Image (cartoon, rainbow over all chains, first blue to last red; front, top):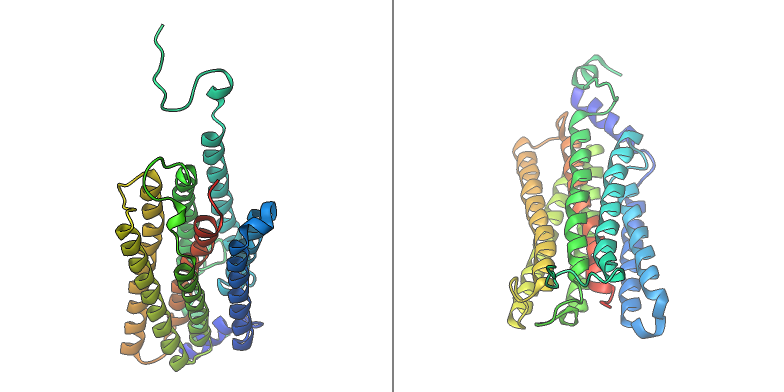
Length: 121
Length: 198
């Protein structure tokens, strides 16, 4: 009886999503992936739209999986806060490191590229 | 709510189960892990002076493996659904499907690595190769750990032959790990394979 109660309690946590809805979500994810693939094949035609478009589709898939499959939409807000903290921190780290290496400030003041021999005076 | 159910609850200051909280904290830390690896890869992408670059990628193979991993996420969420609704057969079947799809994904990755190595891109060819293999290899390791994790859940459910008090929670936590592996690949597939190098 305790087992059944535990099962029903867990059931009550996510009352809205059915198997049919999960299958539809899976289909949507597959379609988005197919669209991404087609976009990458038309790299020259899409031009500057390509990268933002791919990133937006990737973000949509990310949010769908996190919200619906990982149940963050229905679960405690604490889990969302913890995961968002880690994700935002990781994104900031990624941007900071990439920008640091892409725009080397020593170029602007005549210091040369990273790896160039250092001149001793 | 019955007295029996009260016995199984964990009263915490945050009002959430500590085991599930621990998994979310772990996944948040994993974001930083993969963020570091991905930033390293982006620095070296398209910067190699020797050896093959991103032109070596085969979109067809990777697209299929991406689809396989997405479907494994679908089967995993159905396993969680089965556990939470007391459908033991559905839970076992979907866990088995998830494990098999995870193994198929790993098979694709091994095939891809072998193909790239035969075409001259190895871990020591250039910095692009090193960062690519480390990034995707660590993701593959996570998939491997996930396969072992889910296998242990499946074996324990077969031995028990029933939905226990803690079964929905254990399957749910296992599912969180597996879905995380999937969302990491969603990002990697786009950034590593689809976005061209400039």
